[in-house]
Image 1 (cartoon, rainbow, N blue to C red):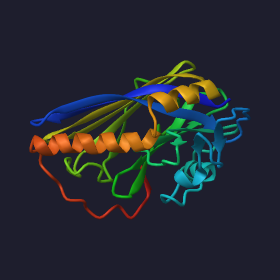
Image 2: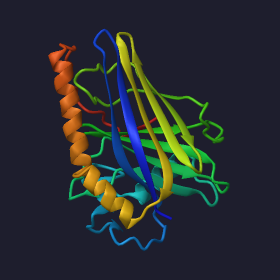
Image 3: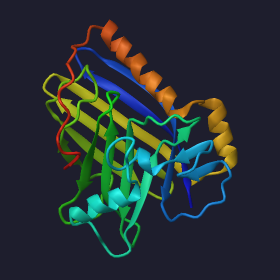
Image 4: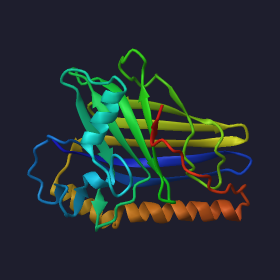
Length: 249
């Protein structure tokens, strides 16, 4: 079943120059083998809501989708019997395709979350993916914090130093993801929260009316917040060369 996650995201900047915002977002959550009869949603075909493999998994615009995610998991020893891989991502809407972050989630045969690839895109055309899992491949629960060193320049108002702390609470009714970025002079807290339910054409129409242009709207909001930080005279950091590797832990 293809699922719809009507969510909202929060970003709060810490440190001397503070700023915070919340806005609503629309995500789809599905497995590549999910069968559906939703007229307004398609996988690898143009529609009102659509997910294209080339937008996810691997280099931007040249992604390989689910096959890439399974290859990354397998390469890191995450290849359990009957493992299911699902993608949580903002769909294309009216041909827009930019999404700041998507999540590839691996579930074991008992539907327990065991690994996540956090696929991050910046507005400069770069992509980097953070691989999150416990060393013993035990279930990732809401109380488990997974730490990764920052590798991708995302905001010109944040340095490259520091690390991310990821936490995931994924159950049958909702999804809550928290990312804390900490460095010596401040940091950022970001959350994504939403209820899970079946995706329907009616929900797609409502989302298209309330939040037209989907991810293009998100891109506009990102630049709006950057303008606010510039006005507040937040420290500006030049874009460094992106990392040579595309996936890291």
